[in-house]
Length: 293
Ligand code: PD2
Ligand code: ZN
Image (cartoon, rainbow, N blue to C red; front, top):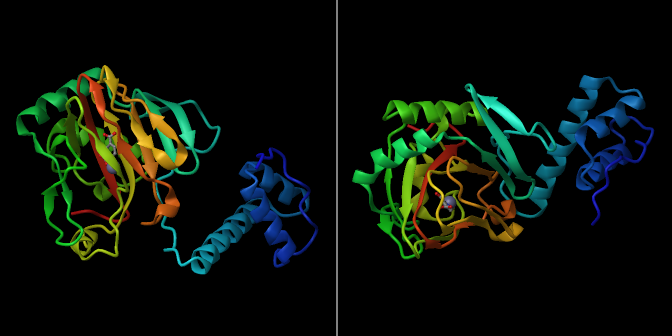
């Protein structure tokens, strides 16, 4: 469907009028910028703040009834670092970070220059002597086990384990407006030639018994930030198959993605494509809905 850029006139009616509610939902579905929807509502007499609250309430109600009607989990609040068509650079804790690409569904933002070269090199140097074969959570038992779908080596820092970890964690918290305490410790991975991380979801599937213990520590994961610590000579992109989108692994850049419920409807399926030449180093930060201890 072609995306519209200007809203039709808002129908005249009281806020309880189903026609007005349907109009608001139709604008959102058509991709009309929220400011334009608000302007159209103000034009027909609503005060700015009342219009904001009305639009939020209508869209929340729409999403909730869609979830109920389709047997989906209700959406959670997730980090939302930037609006559509916003600034192309942000200053975060004194560092200029560029917005290189942004997708709405799945919600993906690619940031340029999130880490300095020196920060990338220091993370690699600190992690290198502690690498082990990567593991994944076994959904049946809740144990971490090696898996053929994840052929990297890795290690995990505790939150705030080194001054550099703490600095990066503060930067992430500021960029994403999400508490440091809701983050898991940084995980560093190294992929050699041929190594990959096949497409998966980062949330914990609540249908499996092995997820209960981890969910008690801060609830669901709601977003991920994958930071590239080097630039592989070839391959190693982070791929989002549902969107036919890939983020190139470029030293210092980072790809953010969020998922507001533990369900494929988020289209947040993603993977690390095989490294074809050279090696690939990343640091991943997973963010929980609540405090992770
Ligand atoms: O290495 C990657 O690009 C990648 C891909 C998918 C990392 C992760 N997931 C992850 O750390 O969750
Ligand atoms: Zn992942």
